[in-house]
Length: 140
Image (cartoon, rainbow, N blue to C red; front, side, top):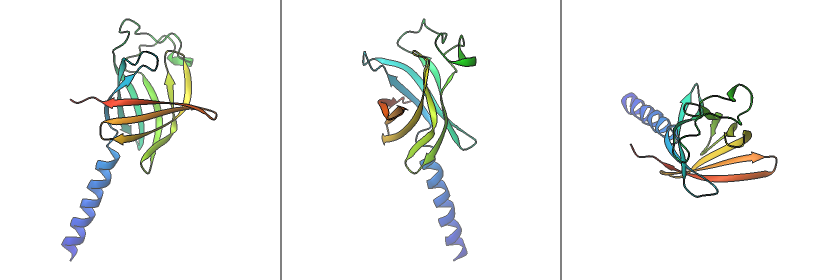
């Protein structure tokens, strides 16, 4: 009886941990205007929150410095920069954090969720206006 309870508990913990890690990994972002891949963003978990950092530039690899970024990020390299910060998992969605558009230098409230295993919907909000992008998982 106790053995079955322990097995069930470990199974549940493993399933919850696997579910939380679904968004963790590398994602190909798509440029809204051209429809071409723009960058690879790696989503990672730290202290129960989720972040996304640029790990590779695809569209304009020569534009490597963030000229329009706000505050301390201005003039910093884009590769390695967190563009998604402080997201918290709430059910199947991740929300409560922010996303930055390094081209425009604007910061938006953010929400994202898995549409399927290989597709992530990423939504940036400014008041009641929003824009949703579709990102694709990078197979390693």
